[in-house]
Length: 178
Image (cartoon, rainbow, N blue to C red; front, side, top):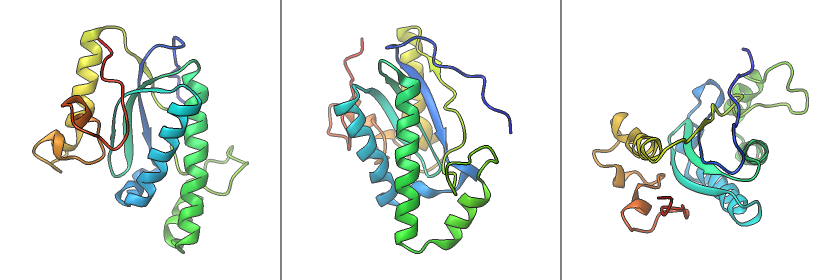
């Protein structure tokens, strides 16, 4: 597999990003693993000035709109920390079959670890207009509806749809981007 040609274009600008688990493994079906993602995002919001505008976590991938002074570096930190934490979680639970799959999915140039959790790249798209921001947020929130998991975006627990309806979500997002 070749490395992605996608790049974060402008520092500080919101970007739509997608992060996918290797082999589309459904790791995020486990609420404890999803909490690892949320914990990392909360840390990055608090300590690294990550601005999170929208998100959805599906069983094997996630979409978000985010910005920071160096979103490329922030995403690398997010993926590195969550990958390590997820592997540690799986090891502590004796999830040998999943660990074997993550080991088998590791790309040859990833010499610093035994396992690979995330596919390379985040396919960032810079948000260039209010219209694009609205379209991407609607896409994010309707992802579970399109997949047939829920009839209403507000019913998907791991999404910022509730935040945009003035309800409490599981993690804070910036809804005042207009």
